[in-house]
Length: 244
Image (cartoon, rainbow, N blue to C red):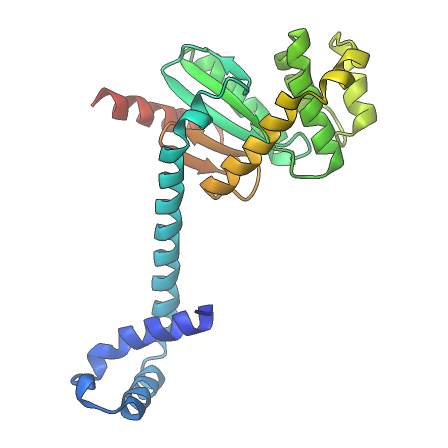
């Protein structure tokens, strides 16, 4: 059913109180009455659009939370995902991000602030390179840096770089943080690197995320840029829910 037809249907339902006993009328009479009701009360269309949007948003939210429940282990306990903060923390925050996303770079300070202020936050990173070849190269390089024990240092350095992340810039920063770039480029082709990125793509699609950054805080989906205080509020709510 097209969106236009959906709106007409919702408008018709909204107009039904104005066309009592419609079941006793012919289809043509019902259509005429609905049309007349809309002419007399054009706000019915706006109400129908609003009701349709609310229904769609509710359906999307229900679908996303069902996906979160079904994929909870993959989100929070994937051994192939980098974990920062406190690995034994009582609340897990998952961030989907892209090194070329300006909002992700802005969010870096907010996420760092959260981890520094709350020692019981466990931070799981999902490399989700959706902004081109440079993003993919950066994500693969960051994941490969795990083999040299430098993922965290490299991650923060990439997030803080000026200009677009591309092969030249990423390798320059790799050298600055002490990575062996020849080994790094070999490790970028490892199956676990490709698997992590593919898993991020699949999880983001299931959760209904359409951009970066996007966060999951236990049972809460938090798409888009958020400040430290908003992340902390979500963490606090998760703790309260767990304590009940």
